[in-house]
Amino acid sequence: MIDLTIRLRESPEAGEHEFRLVADANGPSAESTLPDPAAALAAVEWYGEDIFFPKPGPPKLCTQQYGGPQVAVVTGTFHGRAVEAVFTRTDGCEISRWKTMAPLLGNAAGASGAI
Image (spheres, rainbow, N blue to C red):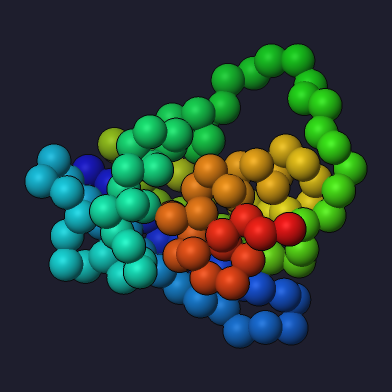
């Protein structure tokens, strides 16, 4: 079972967009409010474990580039595990995470990962 709430803010001054992804073994449910819940579910199933629950390791080297002021906060449950993840576009590593999960972030302006 997946039940995630996504709160996306395009800039500190902007209003917040809120989306929800609810899914079970049969796929996304009618409660899902993302523009493309099937694509969001596919991204979450493929990358969710590594994105939401990264394994410890050596520090990553990230390019120092700025992708924009967008911030997305994802909370809820992923296969019975609590999720609380923050997505930003503050450096190359964060931009990559954002692009990977763009369907979950609603593909709103900035969610597509365009730099």
